[in-house]
Length: 355
Image (cartoon, rainbow, N blue to C red):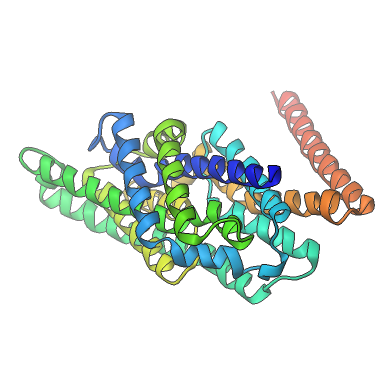
């Protein structure tokens, strides 16, 4: 019974972090373009949209996370705790430093780690999901780059489309609507990451789990999403109202389509790729030189691997005790940290000598 309570606590805490991470992806463009000037208003709108998306359309992705990656007989209370703990710690770390992170990546990484530990994994399904992690951001970047060029041409020919005069009210409203739609998409796709392990372990039925998870996603968006909202809305690039609409509409549309088919996809990646696409259309590809873009890409690459290693190690530490594997994983982590530290030391020493 204690383990069951722990699993639910972890799932709800994870759901709150999903809300925090999703806030930037859904309302960052509206906030960055000043369609919504108050941060808290943007976060509440994101939370409401995510709640409705989860309760009305989150069932298919829950099914995929709960039974589409590893067999249901593998799921237990202990396995659910390992998956949720691994994913939650990874996501919480990203939220603390203010980096938008894909909850789908950390969750699927954790589930795959469990499957590898038990040597039972639906590899084709995993590869199918991962392919969409690449396809969706690429499509979002290309689409938003094209939209950005069209918007740039239109705003040059018709300056009022930049949000001047009477157009500002209507363009702001359009951006807020597309942002809300994207929040709806976030709820459809991402709540499953917190609830799927509980449903897979048969600790709760899908409908009740989705409602509970959606509520905590709403709380997370409202109270924990501020840093990530600032990162996506202000630190990457600034938007006109039409540019922000293109980003939100593209990201939301792609994720809603994926959710209908039960595919967990990286909404945050789609939105950030869209932001970069619009920025590149206006300013050229030097936008990639910004440190925040580099940092986001690094976290994207590390997050699924980190959650996979964490869940794999926890399984062999507590459920399938194997001290040799645990020792190898610990040594690997130490060697990785040491290598990075040495690289930085050599780099600093070289820069000092150059000066």
